[in-house]
Length: 287
Length: 250
Image 1 (cartoon, one colour):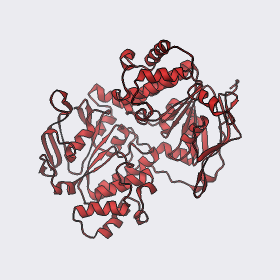
Image 2 (cartoon, rainbow over the protein chains, first blue to last red):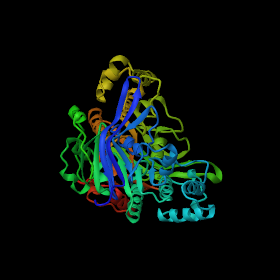
Image 3 (cartoon, chains in turn yellow, green):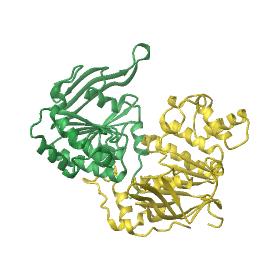
Image 4 (cartoon, rainbow over the protein chains, first blue to last red):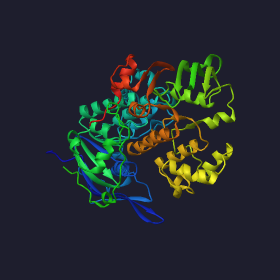
């Protein structure tokens, strides 16, 4: 990669103060994100979502972030004032959450929310904003934007809700899109559809995508590069195309634990967690 | 003999002009010891069939015979000692202020099971938890451990039929594998009959022999997993589902 990365993270720690001392959720990871699709995979509790949130400084007390470097497009966000941070969130860096049911405002129509999201970041009139909202709804493959824009979130299906979320995040033209399990609340048949949309938008607009998921096979299909996390550290990183050559037993375990329709097995492989994985130093995923 | 026979099942919600059918004219039977899967997208009525069998939806018509008992509007007590259900979300299906011990002993005392003490220890062993978990609260357990407790509870009264409503969709893939293995083992040891709902064809294919594919409340087709593997699905919808299920890269 010749130009500076969109996101540059070095030695990132996310810690939580608890009654029994400080708990480390993310333990010193380093990675960069260019104009590429980067997948972050791990089980629950591996720190993958915390990593995504840390990039937006969305960790609330008693949690806190420490890092040697946390740059978004050359701007050090560790020291930014909260006011500037709010411009950044949703403006240059957007996040798609897991469940549209909990992330859309239930008492505002889709259109009101889209217009609000855009006007928070750009100085545009209401009617212009509405026009842009209609365009972006069309872009995420919603068939009848004129009808959908005046619906309330409970009137749309889960898949459509998630596409509306994506539309909202795309409105201010972000450079980095963080997708935290964007499809795990959706049906298999809708999943691919939503992912295709994300994929197309990321390619067309030249964004950087951080795709957080627990499903390694899914990530392998949709990303260029994969980071595999365990207990707050990166245990392995590789190109998606080279995943089949992965070495780490944890990666192999994740791959083999998925039931496969075409290759039936009597028993699925179960991860045998080795305490040594926990202690092994983090692999750097900087490029 | 069939464990479950369902004929012309219709289930609806709402009354008068608002009445909408969630399940329409569904027929299937499940042999003793068989494992039958129901697949379809959300809103296709697959969970509603399970809930109708379990007696959680009163508005249904048709004929249902479960474990030799023809079902009426109310379920008898003996019905629940033969048929039990495991729900989707292990975080929501356990009482947050009851220990594992209390959850299991309550299920047993409802059905008049003797030797509750030894049975609990045995149940916990069966689901791979061990007695160390006996006096824990749900918040002290992980998602997979909670689902094991929920399965132990459903086995507490010694049922022969388990209704599984997406038992692994709230879990990580690695934990999902553990629970699926557990379900395979339990079925073999206790000679159980399963009816399982899932939207993941891989999961259903792993656990079931026959699959009913649902769309908009109706059965598109019923086929064996073997046929599905050899892509002998007849209906275009099933083929679409097969295509969109993500295959392993290995």
